[in-house]
Image (cartoon, rainbow, N blue to C red):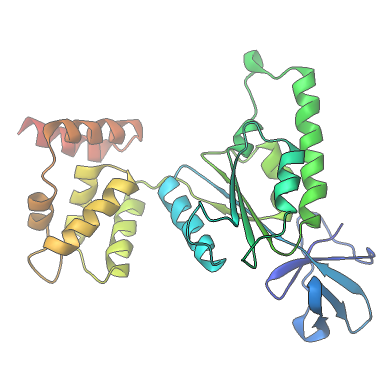
Length: 287
């Protein structure tokens, strides 16, 4: 079944007159498509299309940026928080296709869209090492679930927004590979080195401030690669900075970490193989 985007949403043809190569999508020209009520549209050639729900995959080690992307998605769908009646958060580790289909096909109350978030489903399909290889019954169950998902997603109602959220998933994950052509996929890899410094510069600028490159590097030295901690420190620095630009002295005065916290940051840097950061933190601890 071919998935087509129409006016920002995917649509599927009632009769499959189209063909495509694997991984490609055919775009319907908006100027040649007339949209009707109830998610139905027709092209000038008379072919009928049905509007379907949106499907996203968010994955990667950077859980802070994943969280921000999810918050943005909630705002775009008019949902205030995860306890909203039009939001469902499901545990992908134990989820069945029947449970997911039931939620995805439910019509939202007092809202135009239903947001369905599934956490940890991709990890459930992560390839296992030989000694931990799944039994044949587990393989059969996983294959059946994958096939059922492929069939269910194109048939979701237009009011449904389905998001699979997961951690650091490998590119060879079988479920990710199978669902990739059906989804808008966003990867959030962990940041390191200059990526962290650039992220701090961008975050400070977005919040209306300025920070020197040396101060940005010092923030990483103190806080490590944890974006949650860095974000909190940026908020404090913007409040207490003595000048128009956050300086190294502002960072040293504001980020008054204890020795234990600095040790944790050093261990984080070592685990992330950030040798230069770990060495600087070690020198600070020895001073």
